[in-house]
Image (tube, rainbow, N blue to C red; front, side):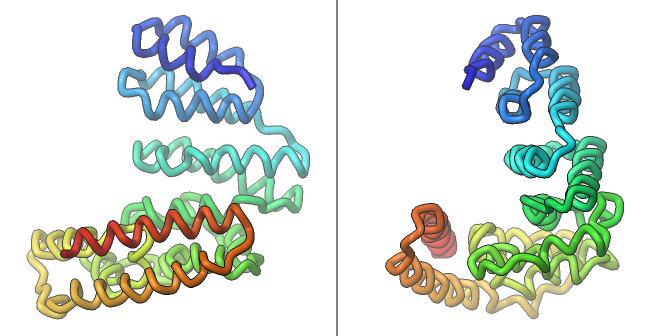
Length: 258
């Protein structure tokens, strides 16, 4: 594996944008391309031009074969979340279209569920599912998962998709607050309080959520006990690592509510 991403970061930090652009434009491998895109997204000195070039480069690394398609979408899923945080809608739509099209034509939906999950967590209340390729045909990837752990992980995404579209931002926030069990792993406990504050800023009545923080504490405590029980019997290293991370997140969530 090359270390071009380290060189790229140094070049960007030193303002050598022409040299950085040369590295980007010469890359043809999806895995290396992923590293370059991720480097640009996390380096504060990066420019819009570098990001645009890197995303174009990554799109061009896509190979039209069953196995390579899965690898490409896997790499995409590693930076699709940061793309949402940057609200790079044009590129998100383009990547999602390419990923779902390949999944359908090649019969390989590998990692497509990750893209749906990112939509669920990062999309605005009024983002249209179909604008991002989340059609019934493409959402089949959620129904073909039989691993119980992964299905739990995707519980929020499935609920979010089923509840869409939302009539207003207030309706979306109320929906989230009425499903605190879906917020206990990926959103920390203080997000509950933040959502209530958002409702207040919209001038909405928040009386019904008076006891919600207490309820969330109880849910988090129950979830922590379940996770600790699961990790004690889990034999697969990858899943054990995932469970341990969730235990850490859940403990932090509890601490934020004290």
